[in-house]
Length: 153
Image (cartoon, rainbow, N blue to C red; front, side, top):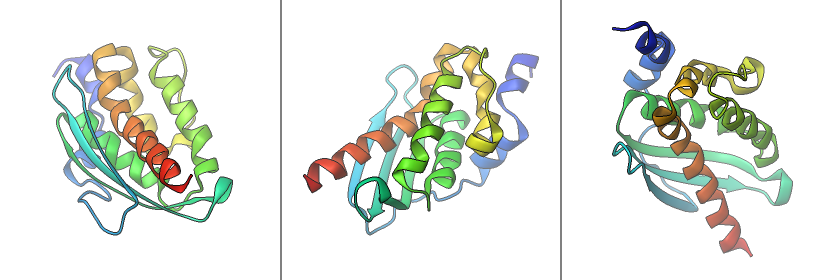
């Protein structure tokens, strides 16, 4: 494997790919979204369940079915593990930092205290085609959140 691929497929990424956390679609859920990356064919179906109201809404469950490359599957596993049990407000700075680091082409180092295992995915920031793979689960989460809030309105 080339050194560039070694920086992409860290042991942690491989571990999350082989033994994904929170995988499998579960009930009950309030929103289900399906996203496809047309560039590479990666897909995710994500279900989200919240409790509470407003800024105190807590993420009770994130379940998903991910098909595609190891990076996108690992990203879904890592994201779900980061989100479950947090409030929507607590997750927002995590999402913002992760997206900024992924869009920086390697210029922004990831804050491990903030994004946890997500730092293992930041090698993909140097490969624009891979950034979409890694961010797809986060985009699905955001879409599910919008769907829930639309239903509540």
